[in-house]
Image (cartoon, rainbow, N blue to C red):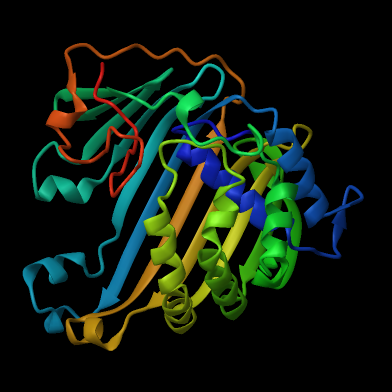
Length: 338
């Protein structure tokens, strides 16, 4: 599936497919190794124009509540901190309706735990509390052009290899391919454990060359500025060293439907140690679990424009630049037109 503006959930799913495509495995089912299954899934997903998404992120902080230096730290220990995302996305026509829920925010402000985002054509709408806000997104014709309107996993992998980033080396135990049932469907399951040291080295190279990789992605409002790219390059070594020191393990699983080869689900989990400063405050380690399920592929998506929409500038002042230069804004080039 080519990357449409605003469909971050599907884009993330395909990035994971790209990672899995780089690895290899000897075990075969139906005449295919794990890499063959993922390659066919990648090809099938190129033709997906819409899908329903259902994702969750759960973070659990382990530690000693007796050492917690504040009530906030004590609150975070033990109980999972969760976030869910459900909705539908469409590339043709461009549309999205996604609801994000972060229950922990309700302890700060009742009603703040739910944020809804809609995209209809070139308009973006956000509902925070009981109020909808909107803005017009940048005209794609004025955005910085990319070499092509769509990019294949092979092109991305080729660019990574030219940077010296070999994602195949990120897989510690080569892919395990099995067949199982998922919601009554037969699926291939691809499982792998990631090599932290190799990943850290690759991330360092990737951050140092983020500008080159970004050139492959069609220009859109989320493009990084040169200042941000320079900052990533300057910090790439330190980020990689922290990743190597504190990331203790990570696994990735993909569920790919038999027949259609659509990516039905992916799951990523990681165990992270925390620095000594955090331990002094009672926090020792973090467990991260992320899942994303995709369904209703290529079904029509109908989204209604919200009523009583106020300019997004009133809710998020200073969050974007209208000169197209980007600056430090989150949405460079966007305008508050409704």
